[in-house]
Image 1 (cartoon, one colour):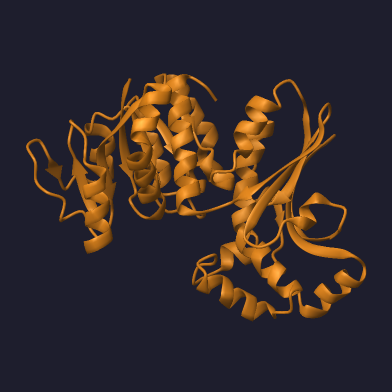
Image 2: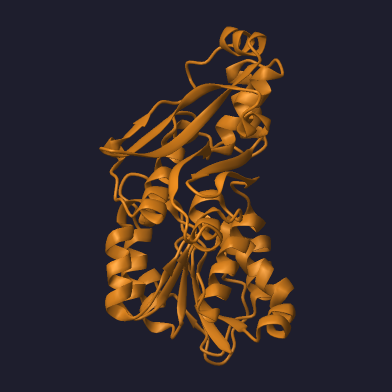
Amino acid sequence: MRHKLALIGFCTVGQGFAEILVQQSEALGNQYGIDFVVVAIADAVKGSLADPEGLNLSLALESVQVKGTLAEYPDTPGLVRGWDSFQTIRQSGADTVIEATFTNIADGQPGLDHCRAALEAGKNVVTSNKGPVALGLADLRELAQDHGTRILYEGSVMSGTPVLRLAAASLAGDEIEMVRGILNGTSNYILTRMEEGLGFEDALSEAQKFGYAEADPTNDIDGYDAQFKLLILAQALFGVELKKKDVFTLGIRHIGADDIARARRDNRRYKLIASLEKTSSGIVARVAPEIIPLTDPLTGVSGAVNALTYRCRLAGDITIVGPGAGRTETGYALLVDCINLCRGQI
């Protein structure tokens, strides 16, 4: 099966996905009978390429990694340069659009309009972008249904760690009563290092040095990244469309060395916990630091690692732990969604 892809966004995640396709193409063909062909790439900074016969991903990666743009990609018969993202979505002939642009927590743009344009054009969407999913999933699902397409978004919550597929497939027939977990690796890294003796500012600087935190770490340390992920989980797990204002959100800026030491003396540990709980009055959503006992499985999750515990009526508590970010990990999440699209699975 030949399945054509258009890649919108060619920075860390987009390149990670392309690298996986280069490495795994033969295995994917042998194991699943799928030949993924990238027929277009569009990036607002690096430029765009389209070729109905398929692009050479190795050459595209070499061009951006050496020169920073796609300008060095060699001219070939049928190659088109210069399309913007919307031309690429509508005119490339792709079966599925991979939306891998940056996350905008204010209004979800331009990713939200990219997803809308793709679905309206009769194309599937696979995305790791939290913005469109958190702010527009209900509308995007309706568009997909109207146009006979699908939108998959596993990578938008915990990167390559399959928290959404676990719930949809492995917990089928059960009732999820609550989810709670560590959904931001930066804040977890900072709290881990503070427990090891660093002050907040030093731990934050270290997280920035290692690439866990942005130059402006507001979304991570003030809880907004975890808040966005709760909006996605609320829709995916409970079918409830929450707004940002519906999620009580408190970050970790106020936690000091004395707080960490006091928790340790009590055999407890600070974690930034994001939770959704079913109650008689609806879903209660919360992001806030909690002091949790060492018997809680989330206390053992250290560094820039994420975890999510499902409280299920039949299966009990199930905790999944894994990376919540990363070039290869998020690229892998995109790949799995593409495979499942082709196989007609979740």
